[in-house]
Amino acid sequence: MTRLSVWPVRTALIYLGVGFLIGALMLFEKGARIDPALLSMLPMHIEFVMIGWTLQLAMGVAFWILPRFSRGAAHGNQTLGWMAYGLLNIGVLSVGIGLWLNVPPIVPLIGRLAELLAAISFMLHAWPRIKAPGA
Amino acid sequence: MPPLTRYFIKTALIYFVAALLIGVLLLARSALDLPPEIGALTPVYFHLLMVGWVTQLIFGMLFWMLPKYSKEKPRGNERLVVAAYILINVGLILRVIGEPIVSSKPEWGLGWLLMLSAALQLIGGWSFLVNAWSRVKER
Image (tube, rainbow over all chains, first blue to last red; front, side):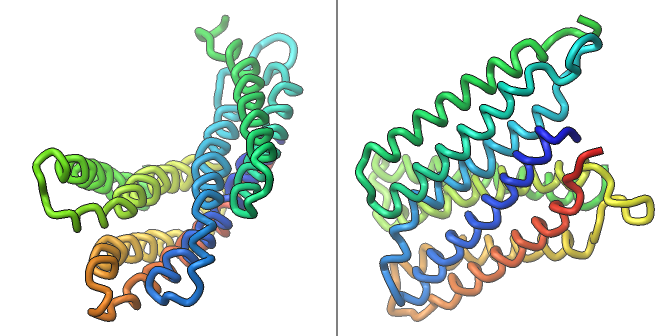
């Protein structure tokens, strides 16, 4: 595994742990009815699990297993990969925590834009690696 | 493919079909004028898809494909992963049973089903995480 895979996969595992914790707190509240405010964490739960865990894991694994280049940098343009990783996590935190804390809507919007830029960076990194053997 | 991976993936496939059956039921509710209580299955539908299908499929694949922990214990502490498999599935089934009942018949006092489900799934998820973490490493 390259460092560019280790960081996203470990970060995805952290989001898995936090996402499960938030989900468990909300489910516990549905049974115990202690503090309905716990249910306001739903948008953060969805953001952490869907994008922080699932999508980020897919990106991390793709960095690892997509075909390498026989000449030049084996894993292609690493800068684009790191940009995708950084922007995605800025986005997940801004959207998830922003929606939970009810901050001005511009914050989650900027977060979502960061996620879009992450997707573009990831696409530019991965595109040339999707190739026939030996190409 | 190790046995635990097969259990994870085959169980995930069952949840995939079950989730989409509930998805059909949810949309059939308005189309066929079914009882409104069926709407209480919406969170169950999403969690059968995201926990039962997607996450469990990923767990099975990661357990199989992540770099080896060591020569003696290539897949790390397998007991943690067995615990994850059991806890997540028991927890999810408790949710499937408990959530519609608790939301439509709160007077029955079955909220403890959801509390227990929450605890089991949380411990299960973290058990898998702890084992996977040690296998995510640079070569």
